[in-house]
Amino acid sequence: MHKKYILSLIVMAIFLVSCSHSSKKPGRQYFSDMTTSLAYETYSVNPVFKDGKTNQLPLAGTISRGHMPYDYAAKSADEQIRAGKELVNPTMVNETTLAKGKAQFTIYCAICHGEGGKGDGTLYTSGKFTAIPADLTSDRVRNFPEGQIFHVITCGSVSGLMGSHASQIKPENRWMIVDYIKNNFSVKPNK
Image 1 (cartoon, helix red, strand yellow):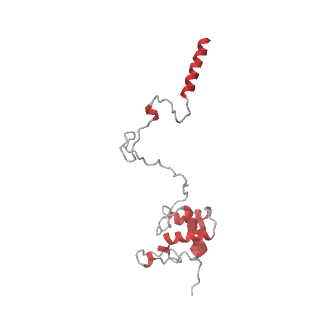
Image 2: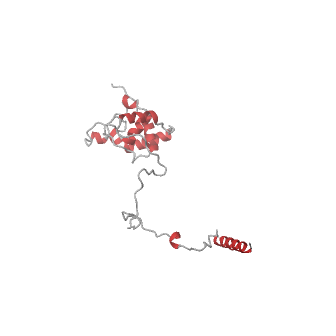
Image 3: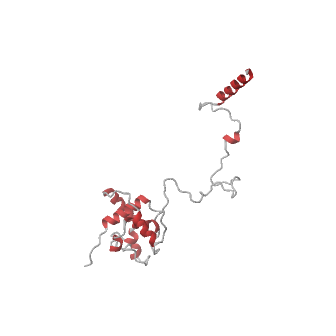
């Protein structure tokens, strides 16, 4: 019994001595390869991986932090209509968001669709783009639900004439463009 008591005290003493929470006394390092890893430069050769590269591509299906996957397929009329029915605009329409929407529209959309949205942007009128861009003031486009316009900006048009702007325009800015289109382009009667 006496030996077990002494052994217990020794084990407890080792335990108490080995566990120090002081940053000035980090404790002992018994296995250096476990606590101090070998660092590799980003683009250097690395013998740990099969391809010998340190900088590895993310795994398939990896989603960047803060981003949500977009669950609607591109270049599909059915998906465009589904997006129009299901997507809900999260922005609150006010002077600030409409001004930001106009600024984003001017940067990304006006070159094809024109300042007034009639499809008469400089890219078309200069002859560099021969297909007529959509007239955003037309009854057809004006009757699109907000989610459908957002989908077209995100994935491009079904016809393929307009490409995806998802990599250039953040989702919140796409919604502000939708607000700007819906609130500023009205159908003007023909004279």
